Length: 118
Length: 113
Image 1 (cartoon, rainbow over the protein chains, first blue to last red):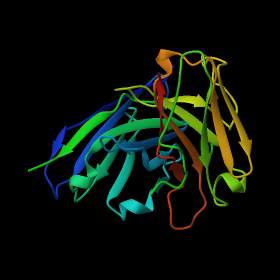
Image 2 (cartoon, rainbow over the protein chains, first blue to last red; image 1 turned 135 degrees about the vertical axis):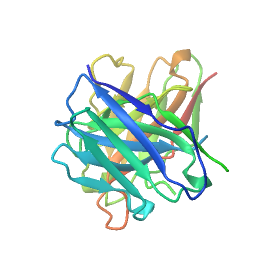
Image 3 (tube, helix red, strand yellow; image 1 turned 90 degrees about the vertical axis):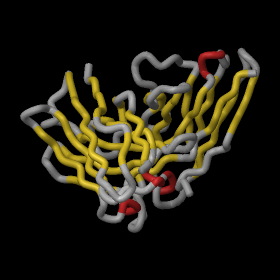
Image 4 (tube, chains in turn cyan, brown; image 1 turned 30 degrees about the horizontal axis):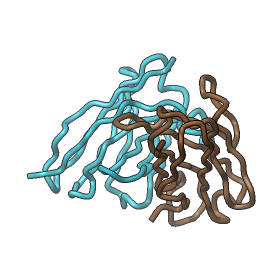
């Protein structure tokens, strides 16, 4: 059974870069599609983007070129990098798996709260 | 503004039934793309509840069911239990050229009275 676990700083300063990792166990990230999704406090879910097992990526246009998702096959984890953060980027960040592009997000990490403050 | 429209809240007494609607557009539900439902209990990550509009993953009680009519889909919860209290989100694939590939509703809070 696949398990996902987010990790990284819980506090990021405005204008700096948010970096998170998602460690995957029980599955190789050389299979499936690996996603980041976020949820601002008290609000709904927003898909950020994915890295496909082929290495291709796809991002939410609303993040306007600030986001990069990459995979580290040797360590079986994938990462999120979001530049020039503002208070609007404060959220719980989830990593999640998709089997195929139009399939659901079928496995989720527990989430990682990121606060943006100086 | 979420692409998929859900009611903010629904409520019911234990044992009763509630239904949550999710209305989309011709670039998502109306185009025939599947809708998936997630349950988010307080303080936890979302959990897949219904896939492909009406399929229950292993372990999901048959009290939960999904259906579709036109550009709307529905999640029904029968025999409401206290442990069902939480937020429920619909999600679909979207082909709008300027938007996200994957869109969610704003969520519906289910309260057990």
